[in-house]
Length: 259
Image (cartoon, rainbow, N blue to C red):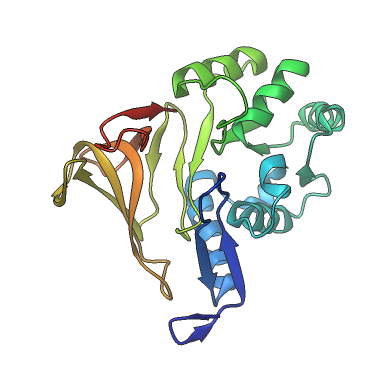
């Protein structure tokens, strides 16, 4: 398979629901994705070598070709910490590891899919002082849908943290935006978010509320202009919030699924 005139070295594939076709992103230069992901993270959080990276991503590990798993694996390798690694559903082992890292005062990134973070913190509530929790979304079909505020409040109450961080990314993008609390995401310099009106795809807005439109210049060999189905709020400084997602059960496309 070719990405433009370049053979793809790897393929990232999205999850899918019954009857839906998964989206695929053919990537001829994975090293470029690795470099951009690390740079985007380190601009916000400092050198990966200072972190222990724990990835609680069971929904992604259970399927092939996840760009998030690829990124997390690269972060784990770049951190160089002997305790960095993936966790599936072994919550007891993850708890034990966090207790050890907390006792050592080690800066730790716990990167997790939403439903797994909720399950883990319900079974093992604990006071975290040196650990940063970063949720990646992911609750569909896994229980009651929570608003971002409800989710972050619940995770904070179980861990003693004052804020929950978040990562925004997707199969079609090679860059990630990060929220350092409050659900407000900031892009790296080569990524920009615009808005379009739900009822007029040709009207682009620089701020307000509408459908997120993303320019990602890391997509050198694919499409750098992605029209998403995420409803968001865009601020004058270029940061954005994700409010919900279009619900196509209504053909007029006017209802939202709050996440």
